[in-house]
Length: 363
Ligand code: FAD
Image (cartoon, rainbow, N blue to C red; front, side, top):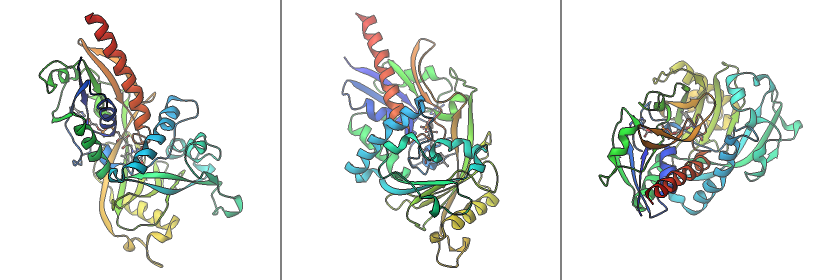
């Protein structure tokens, strides 16, 4: 018997969930979204991400499990499908204890501690010997991670879903229950998976007022400094961040950033952009030629994305709205890629429960 499934949202959460579900031929999937890969919009977080795997979930939490479970999938895609636009990259993390109480320091507290759970997950983890630390740095570590070219990876996910029979359609909904009536077969969907990110705050039938943005500003440049790096904070403000990552397949290097909670402004702030570029060159002089400053950066574009944060954490659970079975998978903050498979595995298991209950009810 066929299962009619609607996935609402075509960011990394919706596409990963659709990709997994599409591997079962019994699932007839329609992916519906206002924005699709190729679009750049402030209401669409996924294209703006770096994106890399730098775990931040606290040990023992569901977030920890989602990130831990995602690494093997990203590793496999990197090794098996070079056309997916992901590559392995050396990674350096610097921690300053003085950042501990800032917004960025709290966000990165698991990433930057000297003995994190992920040391047993990523390859080549090692602490930098204390006599090699730069002044002001309390501890540092290196490991091998991945960097995802989102402009290649998101279309690759679309392609995999289409190859498995999924259908993609543009659509905008005011109420989540309406999406059940837009399945490509013309039949009502058995289940709708809600992957609308920050828009879950305003989408009828969801109206989740725990959702809020953490504004991330970036500069994309053609310069390639080598390894990725990130710090626990900066001296320029409690909600400013410092990270550098070069995307696979000619995707340029992302210089970041910021973590500005409750800030909805989609326009790049040029003063912040200058601070981002300056501190990236300060920590990584090899970004530019010897003696150069910001003028040595070859800028592709400035950008802003809104990380879909949720008080109390990501929502992955079953729901029923106006008689329509829903599985929510939204609220992935700054970790939507690095937790993508872990979250999608959980969502898929809930979809299976919904479908089993439906088929039992029909007997
Ligand atoms: P989105 O990508 O926002 O997608 C939502 C989808 O729902 C869209 O298709 C939208 O059109 C659709 N939609 C919404 N409402 C409706 C409606 N009413 N009707 C129809 N369709 C609708 N994560 C990492 O793991 N690693 C990183 O290095 C990283 N770096 C980041 C850097 C920046 C600057 C930013 C901003 C984010 C970063 N993130 C990173 C976080 C990551 O980008 C997000 O967690 C992730 O993209 C969220 O994906 P999503 O699919 O849940 O939401």
